Length: 213
Image 1 (cartoon, rainbow, N blue to C red):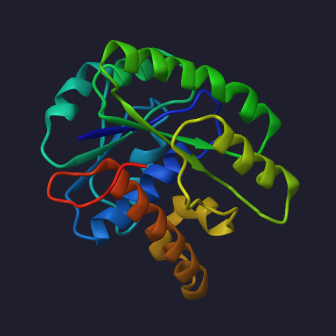
Image 2: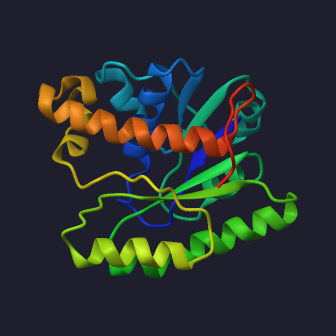
């Protein structure tokens, strides 16, 4: 199963989300690999430094179909924008995870991403399945509350769990969650694990029990 992380807007947290989910799913015993389809190579670089991450490989659009045929689960990090990599992934991916952050600009660009995903679904009989994931949420801020409300009004599946605006996630490039102080790591791991469990249930992997949102 191939799951891509897509967003027109940069800074939405695709790489962080892919790394966190990959780390948590691997810790839960899921056969998972990470693929970096972004020429900037952020996920690949993180994989070289961070402890606990599954193997990360750099890939190009021509390799995406082979990823979709691989056994197990592959999480594919895409570059920002709706370019070649984005459209190539939509033609073969089983699911697309779209992170969204609390900013007015993010909510303005999100419809373009979702429109492209809808067109792919129309061509491919409902694939890729789409799951929106709120990111960098701080419930003390009005923008975060507005983000959660706006996402639910879009009519697309949205996770009940999300990633908070934690400094620990910004420090993942150093060594992953394993490199954080214990207290910070505990909170981040609990949050990421709850989100990973929800994503896994949504994907309904072979041999796993779960219900689509």
